[in-house]
Image (cartoon, rainbow, N blue to C red; front, side):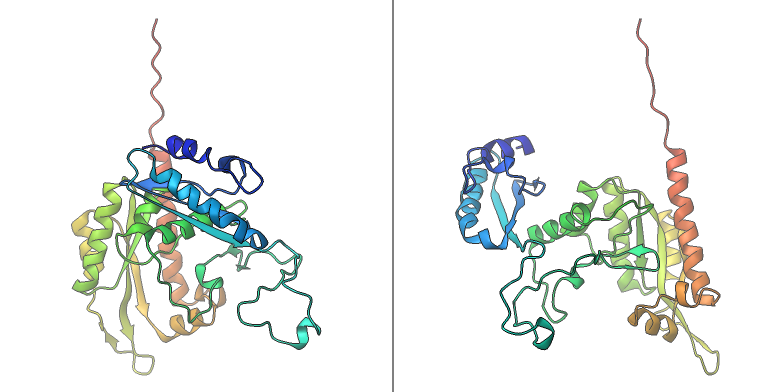
Length: 308
């Protein structure tokens, strides 16, 4: 099974206006592995009903490709920019939008950016109380949209914050994106270090360099008396990094200021740049940067062979 075979099968599926599906410009990237195929079709919200039969025919066509064990095609809808959901009976500011009703975008407002950083998250797109009950293909689709369909502009580095584990999300990232490296974050106790070990092993198996390990909630200093307490033990991540032969990047303490500032969207590096906690984060960032630059410098030049 190959991507070309999948796209060839979709040539036989026509859109509502008769255009072969691959030529409509509405297909996401096709992802597949272990006999499973997933992609999405993005259409205008007003056209969803007309496209649902197309989605079903696309799934049937892909399932007929030799080697395909299962296929999932998602139909996603977007409202055209500036198109109102309906003509309001009163000014929009005077009434709340009904549940589920889409509101039109505000011209000139871009993707969220703070402190010189562009940020995007699934959390910005859903209600905070909505559970994320997603199967693997949905996670893959979301990752693809975050990477390929957000207007990131020119970036020096893109950092992807992922949950612990070695599941579909991590594997998709490793397979779909030329990752420059992975940073493993773990609290010091033995139970948490199990996930850290698995993460290092997975990234090594898929040829992604492990840039290092960070010990989070490494220790607690009492703000009143200055007594240090190793609430989650201490030094476990450093020991594990040494054992696995990867760089130990640093220790982030458990501290009220870090928690309070993070919850308020005020990172200590920006709001308290001269404080001790900002120094910890900067030191870690410098080590990661050096690792990335070192990896680029160490990349061997291509071998040129001239045959007479």
